[in-house]
Image (cartoon, rainbow, N blue to C red; front, top):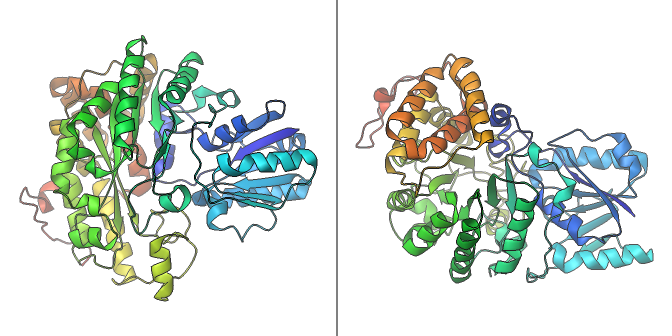
Length: 517
């Protein structure tokens, strides 16, 4: 049996890092972990290939080689996935579909021969048995959330490591919280399930033995969902790292209550973690109450961010605009919060009702749903897929102002300095050959080719060398991220001076061309 696994192209989004990839000379930020894991679950005797369309184009010869094509996709990959499906149908190739796209819109893909709904560990083996016996069904569904002890090591041999900036592994699935807008618990449940420590070390060993020496993203939606087990794993990783000449660096996603556990933060940093993505959502307490984000209300969000960054973890923040309770000044408040707290990587999206979530069902009952979302919550035409309480045009104009503001060169530079002032890395990060290569390329792309922002690059470089040597690698990484964000969200002719509207007492001074009223 010849199986071609296809990972469709991801739209140009906040997380695609398309422009940053040009600087570091890589093709994609992350490998298709789900497809690689599914490949490892298929019989070893089957012949398997993988085409990541974010790395190279899909050729008809790839499709003609296959007996079956497996397509794994998120909602944001729908356009590319449909093109793949149409090409398969034209060539008469059988298609198997799985992943969040097919889970959310399972009735919209009648042209797909076999749809797998649910976690692969619960349902894929039955499909394989039926396929081998010649009696595969059109649909396989399981709502079970199985243990992860039998999940295999991803089939890394199907990809070229040099195509990617970072590798990915998964430790747990499920989240104990119940945020109204989130579909994580719909797909993975509210009881966190974890792999064993032995499994995780085996996965790290596999990456190391195959030559990987860079960053590793632990893709869990909430890495700290089961704190006792996580602490045990971190102690094992610390010992594992101590036996290696070159340590991995890790980053992950977590809930903001990480700030309440000093031991956990200390263990994470000692294990090699240097960044964490937090769902901060909004500085408005009413907004946090509305979406059920109780864990964000236990203490000041600003205090939580400061504590985490003081402990050596750079905070990447997720924010949302479009809650029913958003006040008229929510745009200014979001900018103030992000700037004051030095949240350099701030992913601000428009609220989106994803099928299956509590938010989706509430808006459906209220008759407020409008259209299918695109899966990219920074896309003003494909998100905010409901009738909002605030005037839609004001939300969209305000959102565009926020993104243009925080990703302007001056604001980004000042925010990076605010971060460096409170960041306390455990030790100076050593630069690898790949890091130095990326640094010298950044001089060309950011320091020489960008006339409107290169001055801030050189200022940051000077500050990093003079005052923040222990954080220099982090500062340069953020400079490269900033290049991508400016290309995505900044309109150069809309300019302002930092001092025109910002003051330390968090007041915004309105002026022509500033935040829309």
